[in-house]
Image 1 (cartoon, rainbow, N blue to C red):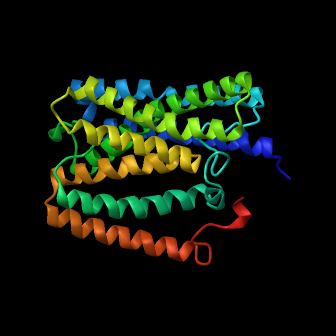
Image 2 (image 1 turned 180 degrees about the vertical axis):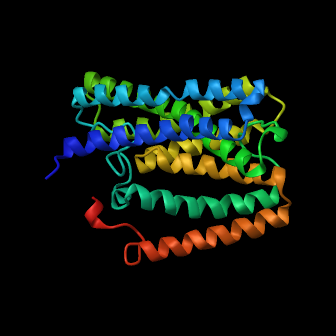
Amino acid sequence: MVSENTKDYLGVTGLTGFFLIISIVVPFVIGFLEKGFDSAEIITQYTVYASVSVAFMAIFMLWLYAKKLNSSYGNSLFFASKGESPSIPFFKRFSYPQLILGSTVIFGFLFLIVSQLKETAFTGFKVVQQQFTPGASIVFSAFLVPSPENAVLGALIAGLAVTMMTLGKKYHWSKANYNGFIYLLIPLAGGALGLGMHLLRYGANTWNLYVVFGFWTVLALLSVMTGTFVVGWILHVMNNLFFDLKIYFSNETVFLIGFAVLVLLAILYFTLYKGELMGSVKNE
C-alpha cells in the first residue's frame, strides 16, 4: 500500500516532469524537425520561455518547504493538490487524465465560441510562418507559451501560499482567515502578474488591459479552487490554440474542424468515464 506521503511526492514530481517536457522538450523537437530554429527570432523566444520553465523547479522546492512547515492549514500550494483544503473537495474525485480531458472539452467549446466572436487572444507567440508548417506552428505555440507563463504564475501562487502559511502560524490566524486571504490575494496577485508580463512584452496599446487582468485573475482563481495547476493551463492552451488556428484557417474551417474534434473528445470522455462523469470516490 502506497503511503499518502509517497503519493504526494509522486504527484508533485510527476506533474513537474510532465510540464517540463511539455514546455521544453516538445517545442525543442518540433523546432529542429521543422527547421524552425533557422530563425534567430524563434531561437530567442524558445530560449526565453525554456529558461522561464525553471519556475517549475521553484514550485517543487517551495512544496518541499511547505511540507516541513507542517502547517495546520495544510500544505497545498495549488499545484498538485486536487481538492485539498482550502480548495473545493469535489475536485478530489477526478484523476488527472479525466480532469485534463474534461477541461479540454469545456474550455475548447468556450474558446471555439469566443474565436468566432473576436479577433484577439489573451496571449500568444509570434511565429515566422515560413519556418513551420501550419500544424507545427500551432503545436509549437500552444505548447511553448502557456506552460512557462503558467509556471511563473504557479511559482507566485506557491510563494504567496507559503508566506501566508508562515504569517498565519506566527499570528495565529484562524483557518477561515487564512482561506479568506488565499481566495482574495492570490487571484488579485495573479491578475497583476499577468498584466505586468503583458506590458513587458507588448506595451500598453495592444489589447484591452482589463481583459488581460481578468484572464490572469481567472487563471489564478482556478488554481485555488481546484488545487491544481492543470485546469488553468488547459484554459491557457485553448485560448492560444484557437487564436493560432485563425491565423492559418478561415473562421468557417476553424469552427467546423474545432467542433468536430471537440465532439469526438466529448464522446471519448463519456465513453471512458461512463458512470463516473463527475469523478469517482475511489480517487479521493
